[in-house]
Image (cartoon, rainbow, N blue to C red; front, side, top):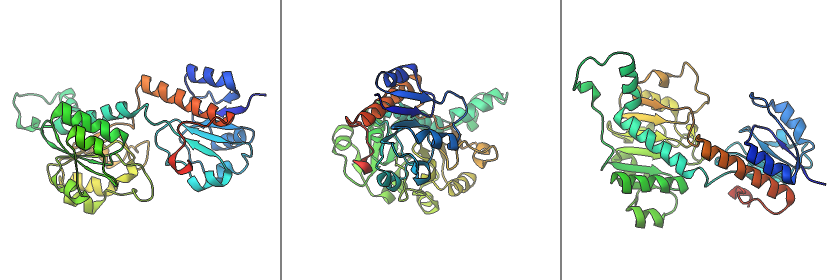
Length: 322
């Protein structure tokens, strides 16, 4: 008998076909997100599951006696309660690597748009406000040859460094728990203290995972160490920045601006002050949102699921469970 798995979100035909070759399965095909009670009920019989980005905790797992693997279609896994997974004996997987270059592209989109104010000036133009040439209002800041500080030097950080150094001849600094020899040797990056990075960078990019140590890692004190010419970019997880402190700094023009793909609460509420700030460039958490990358993520999640239920071992087990 084939193992039985549940797919709690829509996936590509290729990924579904791959699963069907190895497993019996059921799938949630509605456009709306699966209700939590429905997901809990489905997991009671499943040997494995692909799920939407929902909290995976003791409450979800308590009656899933056959469950061997939960497969996330994302590189982040802050939705996983690690201790609950350990207690239940369930493997958690994610989808790294396949989205690294795509997210790095989006980061540079944010850098360029935030520095050159293209999103803001597009709205200015669309509203019919462009009525003279060489308006001083249009002035922005250079990206090339500026100082870039990267907080968190993992795989995506490396891709950002390559673009910065080789493409824009930027001076790159980074803050990380451990030294990254590759970016130092290939892209002339310097490992510095957090204070040095905050004080000296023209552009700061945050690429940290979200956990209890990194929640509000950038707060009021850290923002105060930046200068009025600093652009702050975040494409990792919203709660890493204290959003209230950031909004205050943007309103007071304590920093040049912020370019954000992620937020403390998502989707972004219609009354969030960031929506009214011209020095905030915002996108709706689309770091990996290209068709090619999302298709690759679905297939990788499917392979992790199948390998997990067949006992051959998923490739992308989260590090805390290896």
